[in-house]
Image (cartoon, rainbow, N blue to C red; front, side):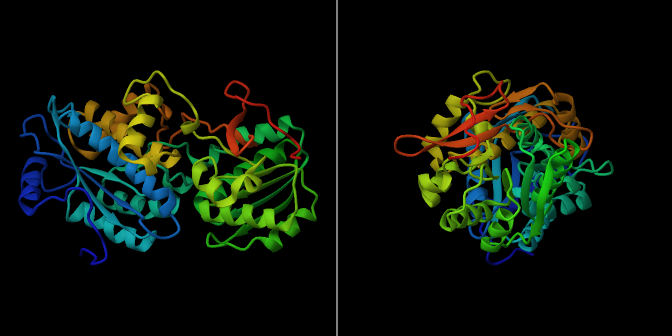
Length: 421
C-alpha cells in the first residue's frame, strides 16, 4: 500500500507504462531472458531518500548524486543496455522515508511489488539500508547499496546485494589503526553508536590496536540517538588517552565535537567519522575553533581522479554537480553518483535484465572498473573491498580550516600535527 505521506519525485510511471514494462520484462522482477524479447521503453530506478530526520543531511546529497547520473545518461539518450545493444531512457521512482527504517521497509516493498522497478537502490547508511537488504533478499531483487556498509549485510547465502561506493565498514579503520601505530600512541579511548556501521568500525579498531599492544582504556557503546556527551568526555579524560575516537553519524559527531569544544578539554588526537564527508556542513556548524586539528576519514571526494574507465573525471563531476545539484558537493553526492556508475556497468555488461545477470556482470567487472570513487572491487558476498579510506586532518588556514590527507604517505598532501596544540 502506498503511504499517504510519501512523495514521488522525478518522473513516476503511469499505469500504462507499468503494463508495458511488465510485458517487456516479465511479471517477476527476476525475469531471465531479454535476448528474444522486446526492449523495455525505459529502465526504472527505484529508491528512497530522507528529506527530513536524522539522516537527511547525508541522504539528500546522495540522492542528488544519483539524480545527476540519471540526468547525464538521459542527455545521451539513456543508459546503454548491453542485452539490447542500445541506449534506453532512465526513469526514477523515489519516495521519502523520513529517516525511518520502518517507513523505508514499506516503501522498498512498494518499489518491488507495485512499481516493479528494474534497478533497486537503497537509501543512505546502514540503518536505512538494513530493511532494503531484507526486502531485496526476500524478493530476489538485487540491492545496489551506495553507503550501507554494515557487516551483517554481506553473507554467502545472499547474492542480492552489491556495495557500490564505500568499503565494507569493518575495514574502514585499517589505515586509522596504522596511523595510531605510526604515531606510537599507547592509550586510546573509543565511544561508538550501537549500530552495524559504527560498531563494526569500533570492533575492528579495538582488535587491531590490542594486537599491537595499544591499550584501549575506554570502550563504550551508546544509542545512535545520543546527543549528550558531557559525561562521556569527562570519563575519557580520566583515562589520559593519547587519542579519542568517536564513531557515530553526523548528528552524533556534531554534538560530540561541539560539547568537546565547550568543555575546554583538549585531547592530543580527536577523531570523528563524518566531517570528511560533510565538510561544508561541519564548518558551518562548528567553525574553525571546533574543527581545527581534529581527524576524520578523507573520502575520495578529496582526491582528483583524472583517468577513469566509466563516468566523469573528478574535475568534470565537480563542474556538473555545481551546475545541477550544488547540495551534492560533498562525499555523499559522490557516493550517489558512483552508485549510478555501478548500475551503468551492470546494465552494460549483463546478458539480460534478470537480477542475477546484473550481479554476475558486476563480478565480471570487479577490479577493472575505475571511477572518481576509485577502484570498484567486490568480494564473493558483494562487499566493496577495493577502497581504503585515508586518514585526514582538518588543519587551520589564515581564515578557516582545510581538510588534508595525512596518512598513508603515498596519498598524503600534508603532515599530521600530533599532538594537537
